[in-house]
Image 1: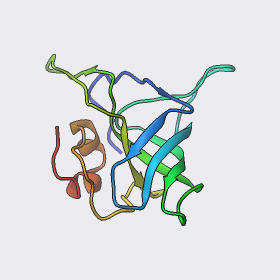
Image 2: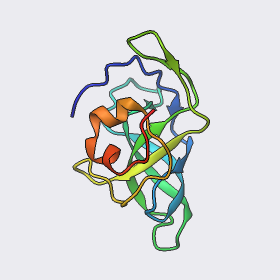
Image 3: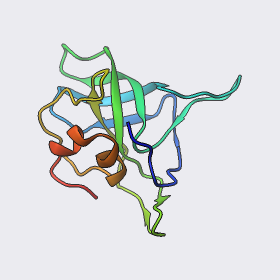
Length: 132
């Protein structure tokens, strides 16, 4: 997995709600953990665009509701800075469900994804309609 070139501000913490942006059956996700986060005692894990998070499905089809899944954050509301100086932000916080290898579970993504996600997860960008 490639590193992210941008200086992404990590603003999504435990308990943050995300829109599930694929056709896997899940609608709303809640963050319950961040993969690879190393912090200190008493500090909540944080995540940003391009990070893999562990989520609980809050709303969706009855067969996936309540399950624990991994997801890649594709959009966040808080603006972050790219190396060329441009600052970018999105209208909502969204994620795409992935398996343990980082491959998407669904067959299509409904919204655009950030360029940082496309560089890090090429299979997710292959099924998305656009890259911002």
